[in-house]
Length: 284
Image (cartoon, rainbow, N blue to C red):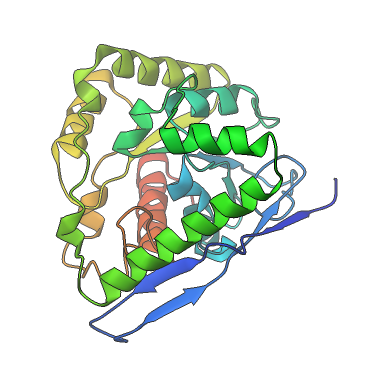
């Protein structure tokens, strides 16, 4: 095994605001360990009885939160013989996850492959290129000055802190950031990609489980449920039900973009219960 690599995010932090409880915000920093197999976390014991690989975007990776607050970590607490391997990568979409699986050093030696998808993941193609005026200017600036990265970093930090301050002071609220409307199940290409991904995993004698992440019931979760039933896929589409009756404060970050450690624990238990009930896997 190679040495662990420690990556510290010193420009961003984990933010959780709970006005109904603390009345003030906490702002801490997270550290990331990347093991020799290229996954987040400590080195993986390849002698474990079972292996479960999680694939997903920043929700799975645990962007801005600590290693012991992620979905794969909490899943590992439920199954000591099958720790959750964190293969999440921020900003990855469905296309990226398929490639990541195909290149996995554990391919062919996995019991479960759990793919966590939010709506946006269906619209993040590998070849997507964004050329906003700001990016073009910074790209040109980088060619002549090493300070460009520092400037870009500080601008992002200033924008993040300003948004947090405005949220805490009550000038902006959750409803000021309406979710982008995505209807991935209306696109036949997306449906075929899911079927192909499912077949690829099964071909390696591993069990695929697709988790369609959503805080509240929507067309996304309902369409996923219908599609999975028709195609007889292993899917978890009732994540909103796991949050039913729970206050959103403490479950989301301030911009609703990334879940907190608290919501990750809820989702991890929901997934582990599904694995236990459907596949008869024990907690030992």
